[in-house]
Amino acid sequence: MLGDDVLAALKQARKTEESPLGREVLSQLIDNAKIAQEERLPLCQDCGTAVVFLEIGQEVHINGDLNAAIEDGVRRGYTQGYLRKSMVNKPFSTRINTKDNTPPVTHIEIVTGDRLKITVMPKGAGAENMSKLAMLKPSDGRQGIIDLVVRTIEEAGGNACPPLIIGLGIGGTAEKAMLLAKKALLRKVAEPNPDPEVAKLETEVLAQVNALGIGPLGFGGRTTALAVHAEVMPAHIGSLPVAVNLQCHSARHKETVL
Amino acid sequence: MHITSPIDAEIIEKLTVGTRVLISGVVYAARDAAHHRLIQALDRGEGLPFDLMGQTLYYMGPSPTKPGQVIGSAGPTTSRRMDIYTPRLITAGLRAMIGKGNRSPGVKETIKRYKAVYFATIGGAGALLSKSIKQVEVIAYEDLGAEAILRLDVESFPAIVANDIYGQDLFEQGKGKYQRGKRNED
Image (cartoon, rainbow over all chains, first blue to last red):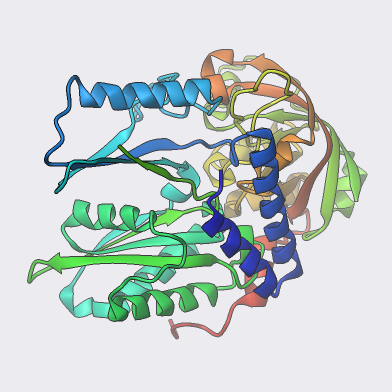
């Protein structure tokens, strides 16, 4: 199911899109969300890699095998929910389907408190394939980041299924930057970063991306991205890691707190 | 414009970039792994599991069918990944393709030379598009699961001409029209 925030952003985009074909596509995406909800069909046949985020309170004690439980949840969800199984073993050679969409990609974080928060994000390949990591030089600075995002989106064109949500991770190390970018996708669409300087960067990147003219599904138009979500952390004196993780318009994620 | 698949050569000549079509008739669903096997079969000089002559391929692997429905969600996958196989298949008789996103210069050239056509449809609208599919039959490579080759009977399946026999490209034209000034002078 499409979140209300994504649906609202698509409806808003339909009002502002200048391209008639672009508006038509946005209407079809809104209709698609309605049909998917009414008939309980997946929005998109690509039900993704199951990306699971866990925030475990340090007071929580878990009996049994946590990783096995997550894997079992994914197996049951994809099988009983009629979701497509897209994971293959030995991706470099035989590529044989695991037939239950396991294994998931799991990120575990220990936080304070006594609760357990589980977020599941089915991540489709079309947009994930167009994501990019760059280890920029400190001298590349702000402009280097903007240029990287614009280049990434230009290269992705219609393949990543725009309108996109762009996750931007800045700082840390190579793997940390990409994780920041992915986590940024979990934010409510177009909710700005609380740091005004980062929020300003988000707005500027969004404007430049939407000036590219790629438009909904690459058919031309003003709505190439619905939002840019940036997350920032400190980096080494010699580094400026920047990751761009793309999310297609079929932006799905659900969370629960136990 | 309503068209029937397989598509007649005279109709393909009339299909120019930007034309909205509603496709009825037969199309075959095949994506990455199925393409790989089709090419292997051609390499070995074996017959293909279906007659490719004049046919239409839809780059799609559906979600599982729920009881009482014809098919699960059934939208297009990224066509670019098929580009490496496509010229060979067009040479072997393929005439139309449906997918999402742009094609390589090599594919566009082959489309022009052999008078074929590439349609883009609505990426991510798998629930909506499934409503235009009336019948489904697995015809080959069942072991590939979601990547098996399917024969689909479609009715008024919506798409738009993205590459035509005249060498035009919907993605280039669309972007050119809405691009705002160059960001750099490079």
